[in-house]
Length: 363
Image 1 (cartoon, rainbow, N blue to C red):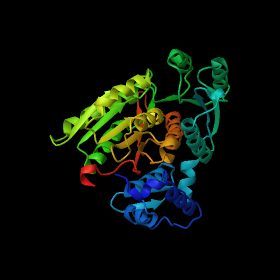
Image 2 (image 1 turned 90 degrees about the vertical axis):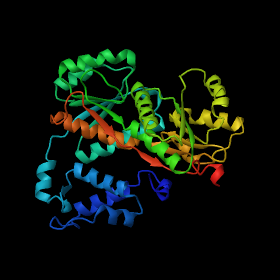
Image 3 (image 1 turned 45 degrees about the vertical axis):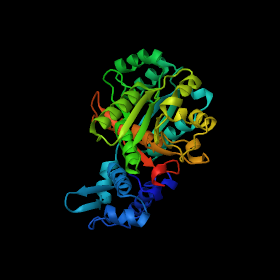
Image 4 (image 1 turned 90 degrees about the horizontal axis):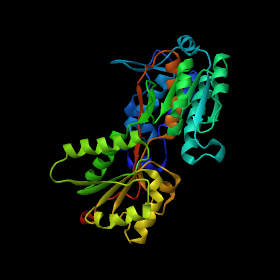
C-alpha cells in the first residue's frame, strides 16, 4: 500500500529518477561503488521502497545502471553505456482516436510519456488519427524507410481489419488495451488494482465493500472481473463483497437501481474514471456523504478526482508510464527482443486520499 504522505504528488519516483539520471550523466557516481540502497533512497526522498525500486528499474532499462546479485546497483561505465546506447533512431507513428477533435487529459498524458521517452532515445514521433488515416501513405513511408513502427493507442473496432495491411507489409506494431491476432499488446495490471484496492479498504476496517465494473474496454473489463473473482475466493468469512456491472447505457437508470444495492455497504470501488463525476453527482443528490457514509476508491486518476471537495482515492494506471513503455516496447520489438502475442504489463500505483477512511463504527 502506498504511503499516505505520497498521495499529495503523482509519480513520486520521478524526482528520484531524474536526480539519479542527472548525477550519473554528470559523473557524480563512480562505477566502482554501489549506489545507496532502496531503503536509503526511499527515506531520503520520503517515498515508499517500491517507488524507489521503480526509479532504479527505469534507469536499468535505459542502460545507465546495472544490478549485481548480492552486491547492489552500480553505474554502467561510460564506455559500455555508449556501446549500449548506440542504436538507430526510429521513426514511430502513433495512431490515436479523435486526434482532430482535440485530445483529453487521459490521451495527452500518454503522448507526454511517449514523447519524453522518444526524446531520450533520439527517436522521432508522428501522429495520425486512427479512425481516419491514409494506409497507402503509411505503408509507402515504411517502404521508403521513413517509418519504422506503429503504436496503436486506439483504433475503432470496425477498422481493425486495416491493421492486416500493415502486418502483411512487415511493419512492427504494438497495440494498447487491445489484443489483435499475434501482435504484442500492452495493458496495465488491472487484476492487481482490484486486489490491492479491496485490501486497502479491508485493512482500514471495512467489512462490506461493493465493486462496480464499468470498464468500456473488454480486456480491462475481463481483468477487473478476474481480479474480483480471485479476491473473493481468498477472502475469509468476516468480509463481504458485492459486484455490479454498469453497461454503457442509461446512467441515471442504472444509478437509481443502486439505491437498494448500496444499503449496508461501507466502501465502494468504482472501476472506471469516466463514471466518477455522474456517480459523485448521484451520491450527492441522494445525500450520501463521502467518506462519512461511504469510502470511495476510483480507477483511474483524473483532475476531477484530485480536485473534488473531498479528494478521491484512486488506483492510478499511469498514462505517462504507459506512453514510455509503448516506445520502449517498440525498441524491443524492432530489435527482435519482443515476441508475438506477448503482453506487456504496466504496473499502477495506489494513491490514498481523503475519500477513504475508517468506517463509522471505528471513528
